[in-house]
Length: 250
Image (tube, rainbow, N blue to C red):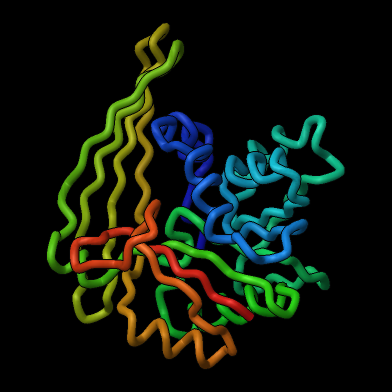
């Protein structure tokens, strides 16, 4: 399923310009730590910001994404990095590059889009199949206890640059029996010069996870759970940790 349309992808980096990608990459390097580095696969790379920064730190990075519009933006980051940074179009489920990497990452809740057990297990298998023995898979996700303790609410985000104003309204619906949240995004993009307003609507359905079920899925595909942290920290996840990151080893 195409989660991000052309307008959304075009203004994606504006919507998330407050996201500290550099700090996140520094944090992820701490998690990689004792793993041999050199090659990295980025599952669900989006517009390629994480991949670009890892490339600048000496990694040879390949990113894949389901959105061709996102990948068009990612391709612009290859200037002067073409030998070490590449991208291709694929779903995670169908990916088979025929090569292995030292590190696989899947960031910004991409794994939450694996909504069924079948999809999740296949995504874990794909990550493992693309790793050298002893390699690690790092991914972040919505943590079930926190989602149920601090229920999703309507959020409004407003941003602008020299040419446009963007207003995004996120309206969530919780599906407890499925451990999913449907988020209806209404995005209004105003051209500052012409005052023309374009409206874009997106529906995203994401899954939140609990320790016991996720540990079981990891064991099924042959991963060892090495570390669990609250995102951007070295603290163990707590009941109010909405965003959690796991480190798995092959």
